Amino acid sequence: MAKYQLLLPKMGESVAEATIIKWSKAVGDMIEADETVMEIATDKVDSEVPSPVSGKLLEQLCGENEVVQVGSVIAIIDTGGEEEKSEVAAPVAVEAPVAEPGPVAEVIEETVAAAQNIPGIEQLQPKPIVAQEIIEGNRSSGRFYSPLVKNIAAQEGFTLEELDQIPGTGAEGRLTKDDLLNYIQNPAAYKAANAQPKSVEQPKEEPKVIEIAPEPVQAEPVKQEPVVQKPVEQAPQPEAKPAPAVSVSGGDEIIEMDRMRRLIADHMVMSKQTSPHVTSFIEADVTNIVQWREKVKNAFEKKEGEKITFTPIFIEAVARAIRDFPFVNVSVSGNQIIKKANINIGMATALPSGNLIVPVIKKADELNLVGLTKAVNDLANRARNNKLLPDEVKDGTFTITNVGSFGNVMGTPIINQPQVAILAVGAIKKKPAVIETPQGDMIAIRHMMFLSLSYDHRVVDGALGGTFLRRIADYLEKWDINRTV
Image (cartoon, rainbow, N blue to C red; front, side, top):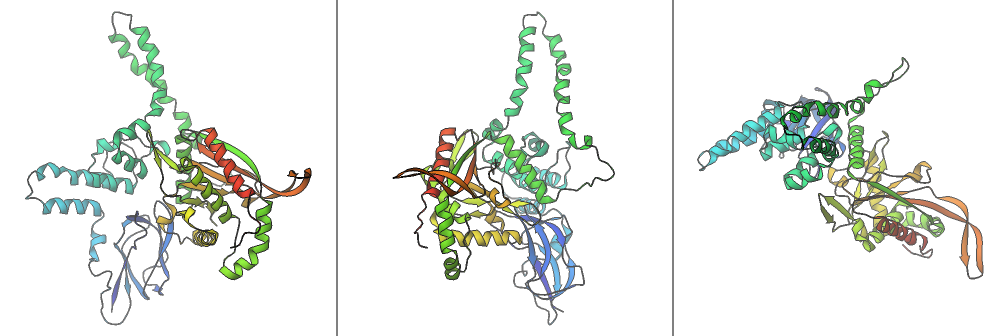
């Protein structure tokens, strides 16, 4: 009997672990090559793990909702035939993932044990203890940390007290992975950027200090400070309990958010809390584009094997406008503006589940219309089938969302952090419009659409946002109807 060790595959340069969502096969089930064994989730995408071999599933080495490191053995498959070790699994022992629930802590402890003879190593030995406490969740405070945040904190050697002092931008002040990584990169800038909500409470205390200052004894007012602070502590409580206050009747249905919906919800709330949103609108005449696409779509599909939609045309116009106005292609870190070298455009894609994902076309300005069409179709199809890799939904610098696909004429989209702008394209409608001709103005039926740009008013002012939006409309309206592809 040959046993094959199935490993958790590498899912991208930035992904070190994944959460097991569901086993598609039970112990004893037969598995065909390339058949799905389990479904997993990272902090970016959900995907499936196929088996590279055929055989019977002998063991499941991790349970549902368990966090597993990339490269760990997740299952044992009986492939039949003679005993033969799988070439990818040779260096990995089967017992390792079963026996030890804390791989990060184990690595830290083994590293310290191997370095006992290094001078000054005594100062580093408390870190494995701290790491184990963080991983196992032994904390004095009631603050929640995700497994990924705990592992990063353990690797960086944070104490529990240090971790509790880092402000979070997630729901109810939760510390996210991006929060911790930004803090590690620049603690002072991160604390300054996330200390703004506290400044609202400070002016309430200043008038009290001014009134007390002329009195000869200042000790008594100081004792009264806890009394003054009680309303401040109690004020957020009504906001934190909206859900229990909702009346539920006998016919109502309570639906638990799935994992992706919770991530989307947290990301949207964080974006509105981070960026002051401003939205500008413009109406564009895209008659030339509609007529050109109608003329070339059959020949294009026959030649390239791809259907051409309006999306790659919009992406091309946006990429050209970003070249003209590169300060829309930035992100913000504290008091610093990071100007991006590449133009990576994300396209919001609706999934069959009703959730949303944003695959990214890297270096979109370097692709021609054929390349953009193939990239758009490929990413959209794989997004709907949960086949995207984590690296394909990261590093976006600008996002486009097509609200017109739902019949909407315009929208006010929420910025996809850490970007500073997002474009919504509305439905194309036939409308009477005034057009200028050498013989004078006249009214004609034209294909019109609204474009709406939401931008971060911390770094994108109305002049830049409005001019950038106008430039996109210009590229669309001046489309060459005789263009060849």
